[in-house]
Length: 89
Image 1 (tube, rainbow, N blue to C red):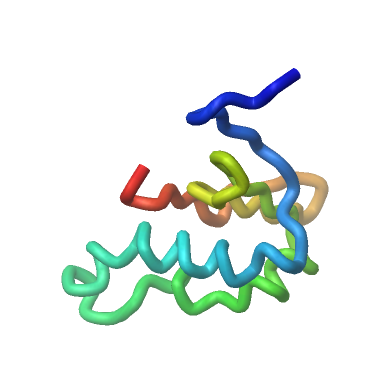
Image 2 (cartoon, rainbow, N blue to C red; image 1 turned 135 degrees about the vertical axis):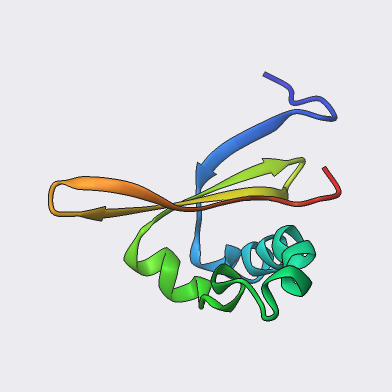
């Protein structure tokens, strides 16, 4: 199957995705910094560690990360810790 322009794919994050994930999250939460009076917690996370410790998925469009989801598993259940979409999308 040939992927066309505008096609998106969801895949597990890899360690080398950490910088692009951090950039996506920072861009997504940037509009809230002034309202909160400080950066949102998600923008301060070390995504290299987050990827190692939790289930992180990336939404990619032609190799560019445009969204992320962080799922944390605890006590035989899970919760969604963060969902972010780059505002340019």
